[in-house]
Length: 271
Image 1: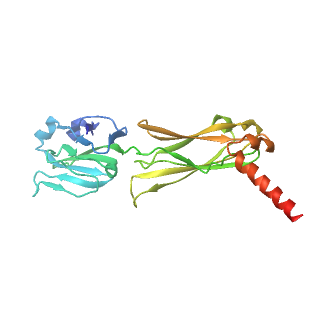
Image 2: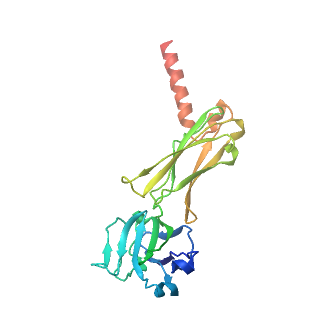
């Protein structure tokens, strides 16, 4: 299990009059893995003019996707309130400016916001957000379905690729240089394991009319990926025959030849 620290920070432009400074950081997406503990830190400084005005911290609040899950009001009773939210298990080691979320799960993904308010008389507020993506890699490789034993020029190749279950559902890409300019793809809606869930699988369809240029066949690849953290492929050999007599050299020639012999025998018996 890894322990990851993410800094939520902001510097307000009006330092003289606002009196509240939150140290600056990045608002770029950050990644953690299922089971990690993550640190959320919101470092701030009250400017000297705040003390002169008698201002202090009025509240520190934490949100995930605009839903509050932690509140600190120094003069409140109680001073700390925690609101239950799926995917957020706050460690006892946390404090108002340093939240530790234990054992994150896919539902822990989202935009986290730290909001700090100074006290009266001005009640100035500063806030900063960062997005955290919890990644769960699929345990199974992608698969290609619907491949026939062989095809003839003019046939339509219709196949489907399906990923393993991951969070977020993997992106699927078809790789086939010989048909790249002619293939038609259709990405289907991800299938989630539960309503409003984060874990799911992806599916995509490929359709293309084959031509003589594909003879004697080619390798079709479906690649599944999540950001730059996971990549796995499925491969299928597409056999394309140039003319009907080439069936005798196809992988399943016995079936085709056997069918021909049966029909000849039946016709001779009837005659």
